[in-house]
Figure 1 (cartoon, rainbow, N blue to C red):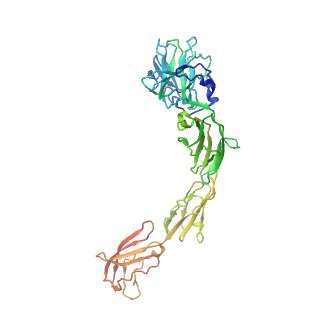
Figure 2 (figure 1 turned 60 degrees about the vertical axis):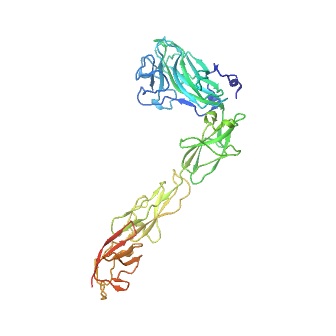
Figure 3 (figure 1 turned 120 degrees about the vertical axis):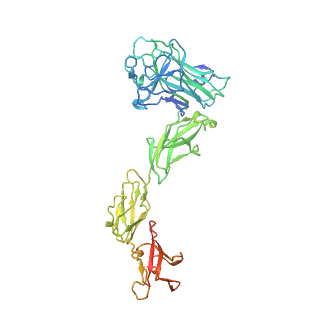
Length: 500
C-alpha cells in the first residue's frame, strides 16, 4: 500500500488531496456503487427515488427539487447545453440536477447506502460535477463528498472520510466532457463497518444567485496496485478459437501487491464473473471453451482471506477469446414419397453457408429440385438416400462434420381389393393388396366379426391371405382388416368380403 495512503488511515478524516484519479495509477475493483442516472428519450427523465429527500420535478426545478436531464438545453436561458459526463449512454444519458432550498446550506443533495466493505482495504469515492448555470454573476457553489458510517446505533453518523471541493467555477463557453470536475475521496475502511452512506453535500446556501450543479457517474471502488494481463508474446487483447478444438493460451500477469494472491476469472457473453479453479498456480494457461460466444478473462488480486469478496479485490484489464462455432449439419428426418404424388421436402439444417446435397450410389441427383438449398423437393423413382455435406465458412470453423443422411422412401399407392374368391380356380384366389410390397415393413391383420384374428403377415414379400384359418377355409362373408404401413403413422382399415 502506498505510504501516502497509510497516513490517511484514520477513522474520521478530512482529505484534501489532488483530484487526479488514482484509477490511472492503481487498479480498481468492480464497483461497490455506481450511478449514472440511466438514460432515456424524454429531455426530462422520470422520477428517480431513493437518493434524495428533494422532490421530483418534470421541468425546471424550483428550490428543494431535483430533475434528471439529458441536456442542459432544456432550459437554454438558464443552463449551458451540456450532455451527461460519460457519453456511454449515448445522446440520451441523464445527469442529476438538484436545486438547493432557498437559504439552506450544508444540505445533502445526494445519498446512497453502500455495503460490502473489507477492513483495511483502500477505497475511493468519485463523482463528476459541472456548474450548469449560464448567467454571469452567480455564486459558484462548494460541495463536500463524504462517507458516513451507518452500521450500528453506536457508530451511526460517524464521518469516515470527507473532502470539501470548490468553488465549482462557472463556465464561459459551451461545456464538453472535459469541463466536468472530478472530486475524489480515498479512504481506508475501518473495522466493523458494514453499511455506510455516500453523501454529496451542498455547502453553499441555496438562493436565486447560487449556481446550479449537475452530478453524474458517482462511484465507489476498492483500489490497489494495478494488475496487467496479456497474451504471451503477442499484441492485442483478443484471440479466436474453435468450439470443436479447445486450445491453451499462455498468458502473463504483472506481480500483485506484496502479500496479495491472484485468481483468474471468466465470464461468458457479458454474464457474471466466476472464478477459475487452480488458476493461481504457476504456468497457468487459459484453455478456450467449447461453447461458442465471447469469453472474457481477468485477474482478481487481494489478500488471501479477502480474495473471495469482489468488493475487496482489485481486478485487471480484460482479455477476450471469441469462440467460433464449429460446423454442424443435419440432413433431417427420413421422408416418404408416394410415387407420382406430392414431392417430399427434405429438412436439412446447418450453420454454414457452404453446403450441398449429394446422392448415395444408385440414386439420381436430378430427383432433387436443388442441391444448394436446405429444403429441396425430392421426387425419386426409387427409395433414395441423400447426404448433406458442409464445410466451414467465414462464420464457422473446424473440420467437415461427420456424414449425415436422409432417406426418401418411395412407395406406390395402396390398392385394397374389397372381395376375393378363394375357390381354387386360379383367378382371384388370394387377397393381394396392390403396392404393399413397396413399403418397408408393412403388417396385415384380418379379423372375423367376433374379433378373432384370422390372418397376420409382417414384412415385404409375405404371402397374401388365401381365405383360410389354420388350414381350413373360412366361411363366406365379411372380414375386417387393419393394415399398418409402418411409415408416417399410415394405417388403413376396412372390410373385405370372401366369396365362395
